[in-house]
Image (tube, rainbow, N blue to C red):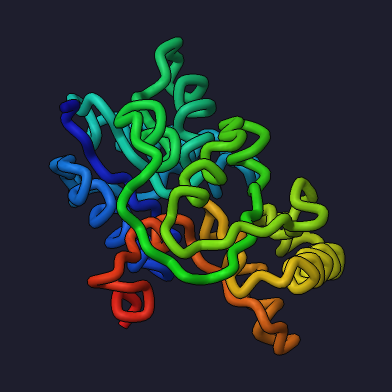
Length: 241
């Protein structure tokens, strides 16, 4: 078994700690010993994407120091996972990407496990976020995992490939367009009949979820890791408390 570390990301650490907890629960249930380097911090994506690569470089260097020596680094975020794997080598002048795996990649490609023992008796639609779909190319990995969750009904999301409108600083610089795109995504989620809209990025889910709550839409957002962490003995509602 490789030595494995959790990169929780700053968004999850600050706003969605339950996702990090859920990730560890899933991995430990499968026999993985997970380390958590406490010195970890932001990967530098916000700085880089805003046009400040010089400010992002020290964060990439720190990431390399904090996670040095691990065979695998698991991250419950397609966005941050793609940034570390694709951009950090450019910032650091290296041709070797760090051994970073988005959670579904690690479960299916490294552990070769599709059935993680989850139980989630709800109707679910999956939203493939832009970074997870276009940069990491997760493909059907999330759907394969969700299809093996006991009790879960996976429904098709209309316009699934369309961006939700968050886009990090895009939502700050273009709020009207961002809000309209978010409203479209919520409308599609409602059209699907799903109780939960699930994705691999809490930044996107934060945008979609906020839009859904403000419009009183009958759909909730939830990170994929929390679905996979849910079991009959510890269902999601109990885990979330």
